[in-house]
Length: 294
Image (cartoon, rainbow, N blue to C red):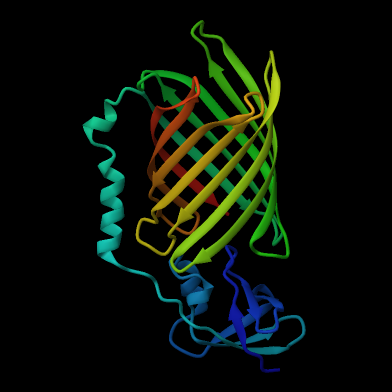
């Protein structure tokens, strides 16, 4: 049976999407490459997922013996050195002394993120970070979270059930704990070289003396095809206790893929909080993240 199929971009790198919207799992086939590049060598190279393999494949099902002829188009990688260097310059431009000594608190943070693909529908996600505040002199905050994400039949929509714990140390060296269960709606899309994602989080904050809910919206614009993968993030917080938007966070970051499973990079974040009905620049945070995906 000869059919033309197109590649479905997927983290697992083994799914194809036919022109009649049928999904084919490559793990059920043994593949024969009709040009020089082999499937095995391409799989060992994380920079070339399956959508960038040979233009012609002949697949034979190990279960039924059915043959499928695959036609692939190699995707061009966007490379503009001037554009990339401009983004890097803008990122590191914020590290100048005038920013470091602004009349706000300065923090340092390290993040560890872990994502594991359970199936086509479910992905587990977790993270942990430590944060040093008070002008990078006092380790007084630690946070971790874990959750399960469900991918709907629409690739642009997913849902996430999440649970977080935040530990804060006060001036008397006492650690307090905040529980934050949440429900999240994730949407994603692409425009030219940009990947655009948005998350709406409804979370319930449970403390020792009080509890209330808040709504957090996170918008991320990234460029995964560009060298060092620069990204921009905007977080907005609505606090039910105040019946108002109380915090804006803006983050700039870059990331580098070390291999197929690990990426890392620095970022800088600026916090603007509402204090006495007036918006003030409250924090600048310098961070470094390590992300592991399987």
